[in-house]
Length: 251
Ligand code: NAP
Image 1: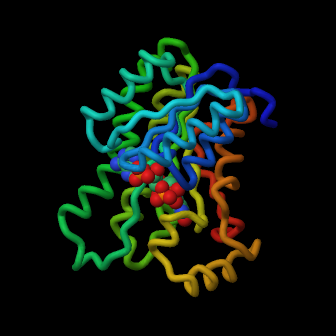
Image 2 (image 1 turned 90 degrees about the vertical axis):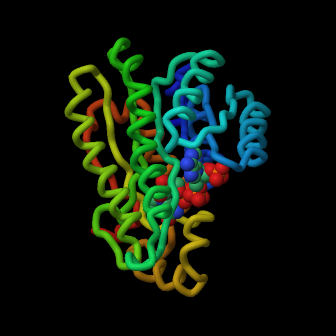
Image 3 (image 1 turned 30 degrees about the vertical axis):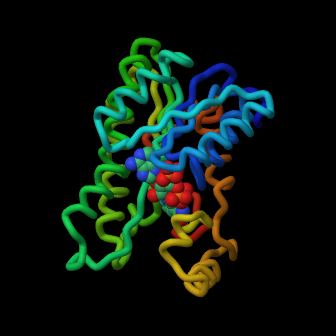
């Protein structure tokens, strides 16, 4: 499966300093991609991941950028093109969560969630697409969430950002499919990362795991394996889909 299927292709994974993004970066590198690890503030984590990948013989580098900022996204892509070449594999993974009553949510919190989770993928797709369209090939994966499919109490803003990302994915897939580009979303269920640890207590995580048919929370590698499948030839005819990676939670 990971037999250099992505050989030489430049793969940008946003928010790859830790969690799901870091696992996708590792899996894409193992499949032969030149991996660009984007991060917002965890420079040390991002650089040690790049070093880990280079020690394994892969090509990898880091670029700091806030995906919600148009100026940062422009600098991100210009840097990548200068250092490694144009992006043909884009994984919009960077995200922030918010567990809050709507009545307690500030304008700033709304802006941060929507700018990171929804505007960020829009900005990155808009910047990546002209090259993909010119070369009539590209792969885009947006990391959505089961919360964007079913919603959840005290997660309205987060769910709105992910629900918006799902319809952005389906619409863009129809728009750029004729140019040979696939656009899909993965909708993870609860995955054991910093994000989940920051949202739920240990007891809540245990209760959630008991509610999942496979009897456990997901791990970042569960999502990464599906991402590499979609980026590689296995994903050639899969377009505009929202694929839950949730142990059967939403079945
Ligand atoms: P995480 O452990 O909190 O990591 C988030 C990553 O996003 C970090 O690398 C962080 O960079 C980066 N990031 C945040 N804001 C950014 C910005 N404005 N610009 C660039 N990078 C930014 O989260 P995770 O659990 O791995 O989640 C990854 C994705 O999966 C998110 O989109 C999340 O919504 C989605 N998801 C997660 C779960 C779950 O249960 N964990 C379930 C469904 C969907 P820094 O380290 O520099 O801050």
